[in-house]
Length: 109
Length: 120
Image 1 (tube, chains in turn green, purple):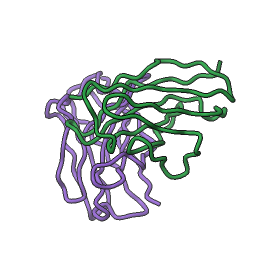
Image 2 (cartoon, chains in turn red, purple; image 1 turned 90 degrees about the horizontal axis):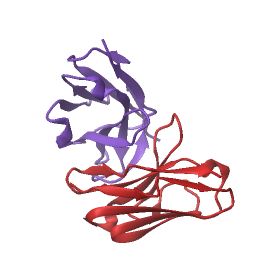
Image 3 (spheres, helix red, strand yellow; image 1 turned 180 degrees about the vertical axis):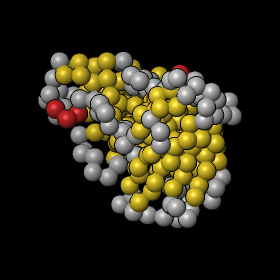
């Protein structure tokens, strides 16, 4: 099974700063089958990015996904107060079909 | 716009069967080539995918559930369901249902989730 490891576990930043979240896979993942989700307390996850770099409907362009092979990155420029949440990476298409990273908590400094 | 809503008992006794339903509104469950999943989140923890069922009824399960899970589709009621048998306290979690973008893709629509506690 593919294991996804996210870093850092917690990221403390201020509004207006930029954030870089990383996700490393235990084996190569097709860039067509990699996604990022945002989850706020008490809510369901929300799809941000799919296919490594395509923003989902309604996601602002300050969210950018990139990467290939085993290393993927979510970059958030100019953090807004509503961006502070937990972020999960996910691969799909392998066996089992969906696996998630353990999450990165983005908190206000 | 498709919307999902989970329903089921919030409390299940150990060794019994957990049964949840996800009602789909705003679209037909057997059209569009979508895959319908259950995912759970233990308190304060990350996301664990449980199973999916396709628009045509094919299924796939997370091997970690060791055959305790069964997912099914009811097109007449436009919903899909999850049964998890022989539950223990380790199955206490928020359970989410979700729809993919089509063709076993990322999960773009999620239900709000339902908390299930396993306790006597």
